[in-house]
Length: 94
Ligand code: SF4
Ligand code: SF4
Image 1 (cartoon, rainbow, N blue to C red):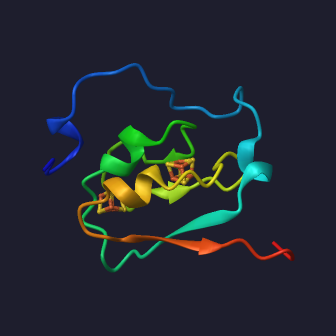
Image 2 (cartoon, rainbow, N blue to C red):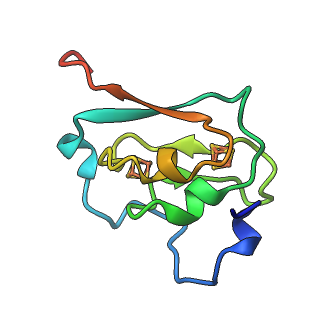
Image 3 (cartoon, helix red, strand yellow):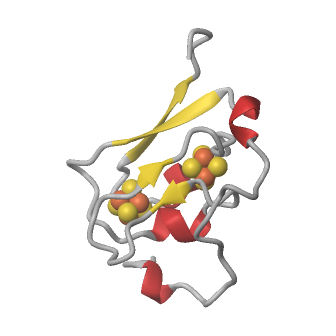
């Protein structure tokens, strides 16, 4: 079990999603992050294949999900060691 993002191997990542496709329209399930449960390990950020989890430069704040680019794959929810991310069915109104 990984305790934090530093336990994961180094891989190329992007800090900026503005050049990536707007994959949010593919989503049928939406990740909801519970800030009370989050321990700021940033494992979700490292695993997200769409770079749709935003973190601050100092890595001190709870990550934020960029719903324009999140495709709802649930990798973040599956990898989160604190079960802080819940996948909920996308509402048609969203
Ligand atoms: S949501 Fe989960 S994986 Fe992401 S930083 Fe918080 S505890 Fe870690
Ligand atoms: S559901 Fe998938 S695309 Fe969306 S934030 Fe989580 S890992 Fe990234």
